[in-house]
Amino acid sequence: MCLFCKIIEGDIPSNKELEDENFLAFHDINPKAPVHLLVIPKNHVDSFNEVGPDMMASATSFIQKLVKKVNIDKSGYRVITNIGDNGGQEVKHLHFHILGGSKLKWGHFTDADTKGSF
Ligand code: AMP
Image 1 (cartoon, protein in one colour):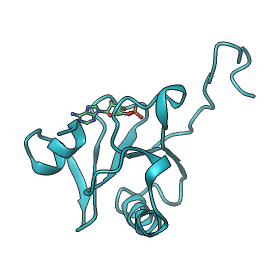
Image 2 (image 1 turned 45 degrees about the vertical axis):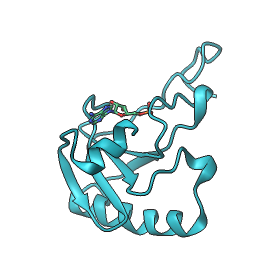
Image 3 (image 1 turned 45 degrees about the horizontal axis):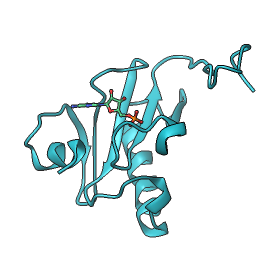
Image 4 (image 1 turned 135 degrees about the vertical axis):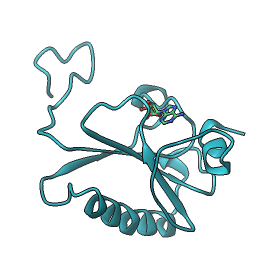
């Protein structure tokens, strides 16, 4: 069973923020912003490559509800999903990073990116 499936099962503890029948949102253990949440589907999907349109539609509604709950909907935030090795995906269970709570910078994405943006 993968790490995030163990979190869904409750075998590994997490700091939960919101949950419904299809998704769980919890705080990232290594936050990159004042608000850093992870949204995961309860049914295991490896990555964005495998997700279907129905799950994406319900993920959208869930994320919109979540950002209102943590009060970053008006101030702004970023939704990121890393895919595969080049995308930097460490946990092979689809997850959306929700980052906010302060002005976000645009990162250095590759070694060739010396100015911090492409
Ligand atoms: P990614 O690199 O896109 O696969 O993101 C995986 C994320 O999971 C990282 O931001 C980690 O900090 C986070 N993470 C790993 N283990 C845990 C955990 N037990 N609880 C909360 N977040 C975790």
